[in-house]
Amino acid sequence: MDFTRIFKISSNFHFGFDFDFGNLIDLLGIIVNIGIAYYIAKVVQDKQSNKRVLKDYFISEVIEIEKEYKNFYNKFLKGEIQPQRVLEWFKVINIRTETLHEFLKEQYSIDTIEIKNYRSNLLNLITESEDYQAHYNEVSFIPGNDLKNEVLVFNNRNNKTFKNVIIKINGC
Image (cartoon, rainbow, N blue to C red):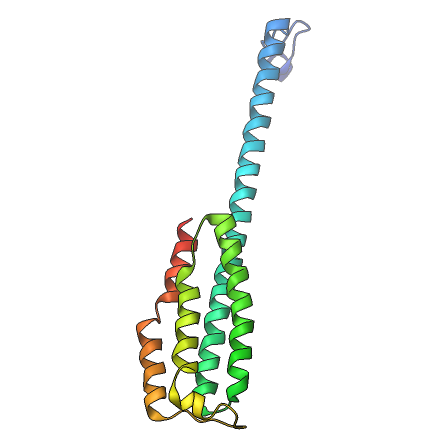
């Protein structure tokens, strides 16, 4: 068998492409379309990633605020917070919730009035109680059973507040 004849390439062999001006424009069109598709996919993916990162940040902030409340409950019910410090704690948590509220409203048009109401209702429940007012000037304060029960009932009724805000953030 003569392999030289099988593999011999003639001098007039070509790949079947005639590179005239029309084919060149078609080729450039394909390259541009591939570039645009890549760019769009990359931009959309980056935007989705950025949106997810931002949502995750806000969700983690809601979770942190919820943890702060749980920590407050534990310390308050055990009598580990001085009565005067209760108002200071609520001022600090108010700053955090207001900041979160403003960002969520601006970024996602989410109203977090539930958290604001949660804070103000809990504050009123504690500070307007006779038990708290009677012991305000004391160094230590262990809430009585009535106030403890009211706070625990409040917590149980409003426990879903933070979960609802997380669901709203995820839904955007």
